[in-house]
Amino acid sequence: MTDDEFTTPWRRDLDELAAALTSWVKQAIAPGVSVVDVASPGNGMSSETVLFAVHRDDGPDESFAARLAPLPELHPVFPGYDLGLQRRCMDVVREHTTVPAPEVRFAEPDPAWLGTPFLVMTRIHGDAPPDMPPYVFGGWLLDAAPEERRRLQDASVEVLARVHQLTPDRVDLSFLAAPQHGTSPLDQQLGYQRWFYEWARDGATFPLIERTLDWLVRNRPVEGPTVLNWGDARIGNILFRDFEPVGVLDWEMATLGPVEVDVAWMVFLHRFFDDLAVRFDLPGIPGFMDRADVASTYQSLTGHAVRDLEWFEVFAALRFAVISVRTSARAIAYGTMEPPSDPDDLVMFRGLLEQMLDGSYWR
Image (tube, rainbow, N blue to C red; front, side):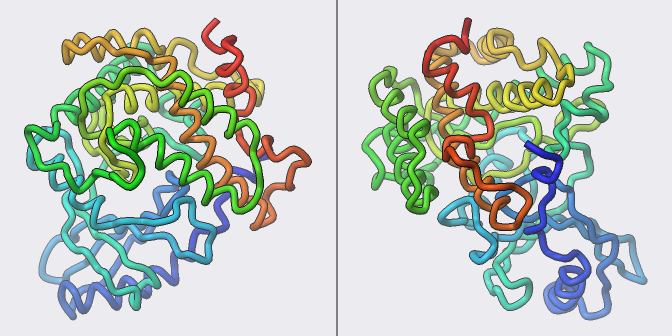
């Protein structure tokens, strides 16, 4: 892996987006306002988020964040991008829990403005642990005191506990069901991942991913209670102030399933970054987001004993492996990465996944 792989040449020019946003704002909000302070937060690989403020001569500026559906010609990570589903998730979470999901102010379905549909949300000011370069390489979280990182870890697990208060018997979550992929919520997630892989591989074969899919089917656990799964449940999708969550972002992977789907994703995504740090001869953050520690905290908050976490970590790795294939293929298309001789090398954490399948990962 090279430093070039942390670049994102597929992101669109901010000056062009600023001009297009200005035209939209004058139509959607008021003709006499202007757009200022246009920026990109940098996190995220599947779509673009644009931060901006609307300036009025007769009042204070108002800050927004626009979530843009990906342009199909820019090698999208997912086969579809449902902004309406994301909005419903944020609305449900905000209305029925204390989780600070963003408030959607505008939903623009017309692609004429920015070339694609988009949502505009009230901006939440805070800092997310960065993806590029990863927070384990340097920055405010790495520099924090151990007790501050502990506060952030516990608060992040508490976000999961609060999201998981939303169950189908409490709130209408039927819009997240995917019966075309299976009967139960976990079967639907497994079925979706196999379908997603068939789309993502684009004619290539990835033996490691196919072995992982087979392993998951052979070892499928008994399914626990169904909750709203945030989906992309990781600290990089949380905005913090003073190590406390103030914004919970990115609901594009939301679905229905057992609580362990989100718990394992949060644990594994940090393990991926920590492994990346080691590969770059950096220390990472030893002890942070430890699997047993996270599971214990979750149980203390909810009374639910996390079960079969090893299986769900393999499932998390499978989900991320398919995404990794897509993002790596995009890096190749944009010339920031050379195509490998072995297709499995497109899985950015190949070594970790192989260790999972042979059992040495947990030893």
